[in-house]
Length: 464
Ligand code: AMP
Image (cartoon, rainbow, N blue to C red):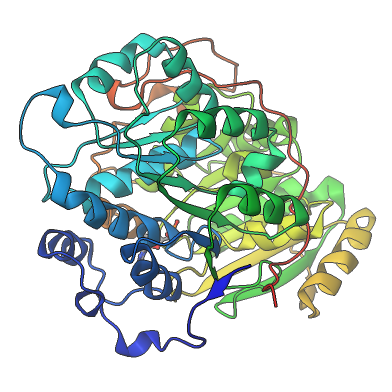
């Protein structure tokens, strides 16, 4: 049984100050440039501040991170301590995420919103040496963001105590189930005090999610901000019809004409690597993120993209899920996904927080069956035209044109985290690397071998 919040909260008339947030948090929000809460924030913050459990249907891009982080910090503020003693900084809030990338992003937000408070946070995830995370953990942190596998490693090594956790957040719960984290979650839940506040965020609301929420939430309030199968009105969608043999050239031509940054989706890791190399040969600065890349490589590619040093970030669905890139103007589907829901997730990377976005899909005749499924799902026909295919330019090898790193980009200007310098790696063809050292702030190790994830199924339905 769920509680529901008032329908149609008019977010136009609400600002953060009216949500009774503490001055320290309002100051940090102000510095982030946010004054008006997004719908999920306007609805979730009061519920969490009252101490109740929450089940929220919200995807990345809705502002969900601040929706749980702000009230979480506020709940912990009375317990904040400026003492250096680790005993005064027990883990009081645990945020679990399915992927390392999401964990990093969430903790960056926690740090940004907590900057005027003495509350400490840390992110732990797999992928690098566990010992690099231990010293900070042992010094004490109130807010721990973790992937489940690595958290359990720390529990086993007795480098973390969870006996004082009073708030638990499960972020992207549906993905955690898809990725097979249920046994880990159960083990973690068994280690936490029974009396605590639980917040669960999920893009979809399948039967498994309902079951999980029944097991893990007490009398939760249900909040739903957008149906997962709806595409944003802010995103202009277009189909370019092109033979598969001509796709690479059509894409290079498109990127040159649009002269803007884009995330480009491929279906497989192999085609992501190949495509990034092809674009580099065409003189378009590109990087790739997918499951075979090391954590360091993925972070570097993402950072280079965020700093506008590369124009094209080629990604597989799994690698890109959960990525938060501000003001991304364009998403390109180099290959259509075979699951229509993935199309919705992909194009949801653009047109966020009221900005306008473009989503262009290169569709070969053999992919038209996928296109039909997508149009059925989103209940609209996407405008189609023939792609321009210039003559093959492959014979001329050009030097990639990188954006001058001194020019502040629109995408980097809104970020507070200092970014690393451009790396030689981007000039090399892709070769899998082993255990390269990570910057201290993001040290961790792989939780588990990740499998490719099936599409999220079904839309979010409000329980009657
Ligand atoms: P999330 O859904 O948490 O991944 O957030 C999506 C993006 O919205 C992030 O880039 C946030 O920094 C941004 N954001 C969060 N809250 C607000 C807000 N109130 N107004 C505008 N942008 C926001």
